[in-house]
Length: 247
Image (cartoon, rainbow, N blue to C red):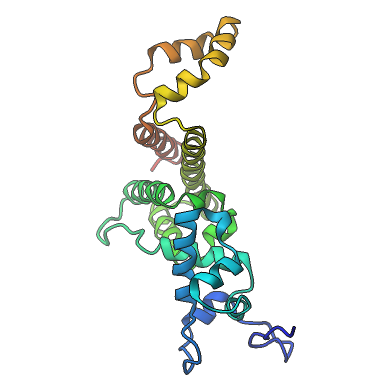
């Protein structure tokens, strides 16, 4: 079966990127299939059935087109993921009047956690795919600009930005993984989870090798408050950046 070639392939010229094609004026409509429709359908599938369910065949069925039709618009899974990430990230923003670097980074961090919890398939996305979309680049640009006005060198700006981003994504991924683990086992609360894991925990604690963890298990009051834990950790990261860079 012959596969339709994208613009630039026959002449040997480099084909335009996904985002360049999105910003070009739409040609005279031969079909109702667009990158916007593809992105919206893919997000719906991922939200309802999980990221693994997003295949070209499943997408074509949802859109009511032939399986090969989507390949005329996207090269494969990476393009599809990028479209999905860009679509759900469009609403990430802080007020235009907010200029303090800490407020800017903190606001985006809190919003990103909520976004990932609402779309848990994001936790499985490769980092380059997450970052290299227009919406995500706009988010990064705003944060980098807020740090740059503090008079930092370019390397310090990027390192500080990545430290916060890594904390946010790592923390949200852990939270999503725990939630999925509980759901797979039918545990509806932290208490049910701890009760199910109690035999293992009792044995480990009884060895006497983990006294600090035992004190946490006995005395912690916020074991299931993931939002508080996230905010506390985020503020520790931001405090560290402020102290280290003197901003």
